[in-house]
Image (cartoon, rainbow, N blue to C red; front, side, top):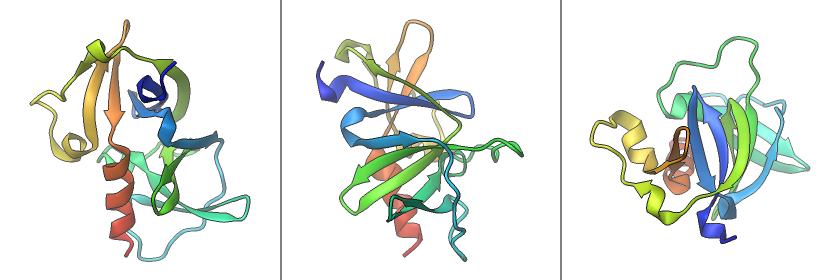
Length: 147
């Protein structure tokens, strides 16, 4: 299997997203977070990952979706970036899937708002669509908001 066609999948607001596995450090259950005062609402907080402080970005907020329902705890997809690890808060974790390049399509023109900037493509799976999340844009823009 080739790393560039393997995607770690997760669900946010009922949509299936994926990121290339090469960007994923690890996937973990909900972690207690420390709120960051005056941070934008896209920042869920900071988590302590075995002594490493990691910023958690709430993908529901980042994609302008409704907030997570009360009592539902997010999962963490920890992404490796040039600046260090960043956690993406997601609703649930999926599988690692390998997808052929011929299933790729550019995002449709009907895709609007923030999602247009954060989704770099769509893969047609047998039973649904996989939205390919642009890891750099999703993590760097939120991190820059905290500077």
